[in-house]
Length: 149
Figure (tube, rainbow, N blue to C red):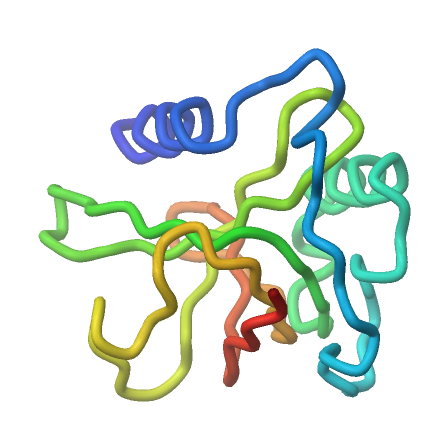
């Protein structure tokens, strides 16, 4: 329960809910910077309305998506999780719904925060595999973090 509250507060504090559905000036992305991988769900090719709809579909039926590859873009934010004394890592995906989507990711391999991670707020792209942790929270297991802008 504490994890749910912390994630909710993190989302509200760092992404905010806006009347116009997100930031007024989202970063422009050069198509050449995109990671070229085969994916089952590519959020980078969807409009903000479709991103919101697809995220809702996935969250309502998470088990059906476990093991599928996905590619998402958004801003990177770490969150210190006092319960486990560790940092959790998130990407904020801008959606048309008025509230952006917070999505946890786990970087495979040995990576030390903050040394190996991009600065907070950096616009990144994550290709990875969808999973659900033992507490029932979704995450994306990634091999690479690509800084897009």
